[in-house]
Structure formats: structure tokens, C-alpha cells
Length: 606
Ligand SMILES: Nc1ncnc2c1ncn2[C@@H]1O[C@H](COP(=O)(O)OP(=O)(O)OP(=O)(O)O)[C@@H](O)[C@H]1O
Image 1 (cartoon, rainbow, N blue to C red):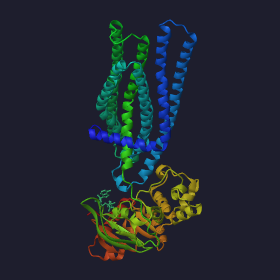
Image 2: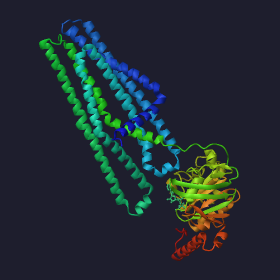
Image 3: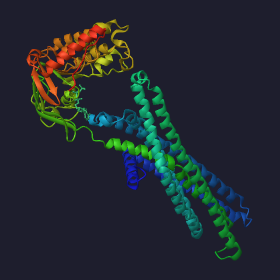
Image 4: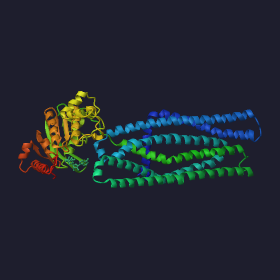
């Protein structure tokens, strides 16, 4: 919680770490800007000094040395102009640094997200993650412009002005200096009051993003279950909280910051003029110098203005810090460790030995699995919902780390095969075919440098070539977002073509036939039959007909191997699990045929 002291210091620490990391490559720009801004502050401090000389030396003594007066006026003008010009130059320089930093940080965050382990995405919320990569990285820019420009510049102006006042009259300077602790106090109080609101606003904004992303992803379910009104209300509630939280922030700004600081300015001005009055009448503090009064009145506004600037930026600065800290927290998430490069996938033999696995400590999902898949063999994995099929596949695909040495491919522990090589040689057809808003060719190639002939050969092997060739622009036909133009079966065949295009030695199918009709299922079966002997195939199937012809079928039950054998062998086990699943499915199929439904599929539940 950013409201708690240790939370706040962690937030500042995280934001500072990100800022430093982003600034590192452009240190020289930042240092140069600081040097030029120091010079700018010096030039600006000259103005009132020149005014004082003019008054004390020429105006009060009525000494009309026109040349000297003109020279001083010109000097003040040139110093003022040079200061403005230099400041503008540094603003442009730092804005450039800020934009390049955002670009670098955003790329770093995206690269990092791509390397995060699957377990991270089990807890991540898509919309929030998108916020991190897009909005929150913008925070780095705000931090740069705010911290490096406004604060740095204001501090330097303060230093220049204070030095000039010290030189003119240190006692008066001390009166003005009382402003600093008071302003710091105001900022601290403001921060206490507004920090929770600022951080809450940011959380709520990210929640809004998450809700929109979730609704769009699940639009069909949302509309079909007539939940739009509920979602609209849920969104409105969060949006209302966002408004109120933002209003609290702005109120703190409006009531506290500007009025208090303006009040301080007036009090200070009155104090300095009062001291002058005393000096004039009693001569207690020394002879009256109108020039000094002129210079001090000028300097006071130069002290209060940067202080006001720094404090006024505080709200933005806080938002930026929250954003930057969140990006930093995401960057601190441990990436999947890079795989060693100690072996290759050659034949495609898979050996699983004593494989235990739990997502959460103390809640095992797989118990001591032992399995051997010979090169080129076809294995089916079946079992009731929650029996561990997808978990086994996720471990085979290295989405989660399996215990060391429990899974070997061609003798090498799966975690010791280089990532690129592993992904090249191991193909997967997921349950939900994920298609890009791109052409059929791009969807099959997925960025790999494949020739047209290779893409077409893969499509033929997946029995989807004829379909693609009939599209109006053939392989160059855009398939729409998520392959919206295709039926689920067609999408699944494109996904199979994609997996085959890499010419894998091993192919995993995750319930690739559960959403397709019997006719398309037969196409998939023919495609798999064509690969037999060449590619090791492991297919999870709800629909048992898909794996009926497999060399062996593994029946999982509560994370253990319950039965193992060919379809015939398993059917011969009296009152066996597989037999029961199979008969149940046949009954359901018959039922569906009677009621005219298509797409028979079933699974027992135990
Ligand atoms: N990411 C996860 N985090 C924690 N537990 C999980 C996770 N994924 C699955 N589980 C749990 O692991 C067990 C096995 O799930 P798994 O998805 O492997 O089963 P399955 O046989 O593939 O089921 P289905 O046929 O419904 O897909 C279940 O009890 C499930 O709740």
C-alpha cells in the first residue's frame, strides 16, 4: 500500500530505480542539461542585481550617465534573453531524452513479458498488463520532464537566487529562507492527503482497462448470457470510483497547494517590506537601500515560483511514480531461466520417469508418472476432467518446469534443450486455435522464413490446402481478427498446418478435435495418419474416436496412470475406466444423432 510508510519508500525506490535505469544510456545529456540550467539560473539572478545598481548608483543620486545606464539595461536584456533561450534548449533536450527513454523502457517491458513463465500468466490480468506496457511506461516520460526539468530547473533557480540574496543582505535572505521549510511542510501534508487518492486513481484506471479487455475477449459469452447490463453497471461503478478518486486528488491540489503557497508569498513580501520600514525609521538594521528592496521584491517571487512549480507538479509526479514503480515491479518478476544447450531433439523419443507435479505446494496434480513414447509413435491421453491431461502436456511443452530429469527427449532432460531449437522441433496444436489478424500464409508461417512451397506443403498435410486455395485471394486472404472468417474446424486445421510447417519431430495436440464436427475430425485423423512413423504424436482427446487408432492410449485418473494399451486392449478390461468412458460417449453420440445434434463429444467425470 503506497499509503503505508514502508510502502511509500518502496514506491519511491522502485520509481527511482526505473528512472535511473532509463536514464543510464543518456547520462551525458542529463549532465549537460544540468550544467546549462545552472548557467541559466545565474543569468536570471543577474536581472534584479542590475536593477539594484541602476537604482542605487544612477537613479537615486540622479546621476544621468546615459551610456552606463544604457549598457546596464542592455546587459539585463541580453542576460534575460539568453536565459530564456538556454532554458528552452534544455527543455527540448530533456524532452528528447524522455521520449527515447519511454521507447527503450516500453521495449524492455514487452521483451520481459514475453520471457515470463506461464505461471505468471495464471495470475496476470490481461488489461492490467497492457496498461503496464503502454500507459505506465509513459510515466517515465513524465518523471523525466517533471523531475529532470521542472524540479532540477527550479532547484537551480532557487540556488542562484539564494546566492544573490545572500550576497546582497544575508539577514533579509534568512527571512526569505523561512519560506523553504514551510513550503516543504505544505508538500508533505499534501502528499499525505493525496497519495492514497493518486495511487487509487491509477489502480482504478487499470481496472477499467482490464474490464474493457475482458469484455471484448468474452463478448460472445457476455451477450449470450445477457450479462451486458450487469457488465455496464460494473464498469459504471468502477468509473464512478475513478471520478471520485480523481476529484479528491484535484481538491487537495486546489484547496491546499496554490492558495497556501500564494499566501506564503504575500506574508513574506509583507515581512521584508516591514523590515525595511523598521530600518528606514529607526536605522536599527543599517542604511536604507531602495535598490536592495527592489532586488528582494523581485527575488521573493523567484523563490516562491519554483517552489510553487515543484509543489504543483507533485500530483503528476506522484502519478508518474506510481506508474513507474508498477513497471519496475513487473520488470522484477523472474523470467523463465534460459535453457542450457546440452542436447538436441533428433528422433523424437520421449521418456517420462517418476513425474510428480504440483502447481501449488501441497496440492499434487500428477503422481509418479512413468511413460515412454517411441519415435514416430502416436499416443492418446484420455481421462476425466481435471485428471491432469493438460498439466502433463504443459510440462512436456516446458510451460511449467518439470522436476529435473523427469522428462527426457532423446535422452536429454527437457529443460536442457536450447529454447529456439526446442520450439522448432516441437509443434503444438492448442485446444483454442489462436489465429492472428493476418493472411492465411502469415498464420501458417508465424514469422518463420518459410518458402511458399513449405507453407503449401504444410497446408496439404493438414488437409486445409483446398479450402485456402478456394478463398478469394488464396493464401493471401486476410483471415480477420482471431480468424473470424473461419469455422472452428477450419481454424483448427490452419493451426495444424502451422504446427506442421516447422517440420517438427514431435507434435502435441491439446483436445484439437473437441470443438469440431465428425467430418472435420476425420480430416484431422487422416492428417495424423499421414504423419505416423515420421513424427511422434501425443494427442489429448476428449473425443475418444480421435485416438482410437493410436499405438497406445494412456488413461489418466486423478493424476495417475489408470490404464495403458491399445483401444482393443483397453476395451477388453472388464469394467475398465476407458471402456466406461467409451461406452458413455457412444451413448451420448447415439443420443445426439437422435436429437439431430452434431459434434459428439463427451468425457466421464469421476
Ligand atoms: N494453472 C493452474 N494453477 C493451479 N492449479 C491448476 C492449474 N491448472 C490446472 N490446475 C489444477 O490441476 C488439476 C488438473 O488440471 P488439468 O487442466 O491438467 O486437467 P485436465 O485433465 O486437462 O482437465 P480438462 O479435461 O478439463 O482439461 C485440476 O485439479 C486443476 O484444478
